[in-house]
Length: 145
Image (tube, rainbow, N blue to C red; front, side):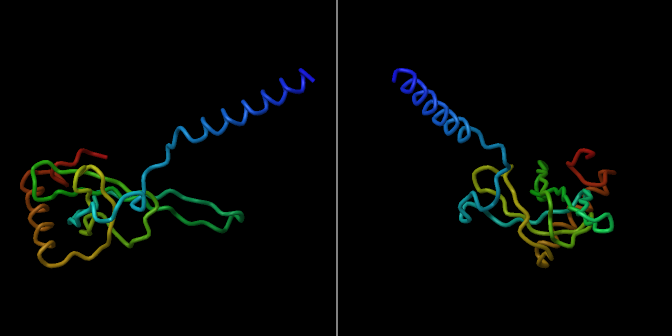
């Protein structure tokens, strides 16, 4: 009887520890849905780099790519911020302008919101690209990636 109690206790302890440690750490990157949408403002951004990660299906002839987009935003400032988003499904090219959602309290948190800038924001992008050209760099404030 004593061995059965000990076995039940160890079994209980195992499950408690498993639950505690499985819920302790979450390494997945945060998604827009993890935040309150009202905590963001829309801002213009520019694509600075696009990479492709090939993904191969079950058959050797089935192949597609996962597109990763690197971008710069806060374009009207001298302190340019950079971001990246993995597995993007927008048709973007390097140098294209688009919109990101930037967190109001932490500007380092941003998410791609959509493409095709409005005329007023297109001017911000054009001014930024002109400033980059005058500074002799491809993208002002962005280190080589």
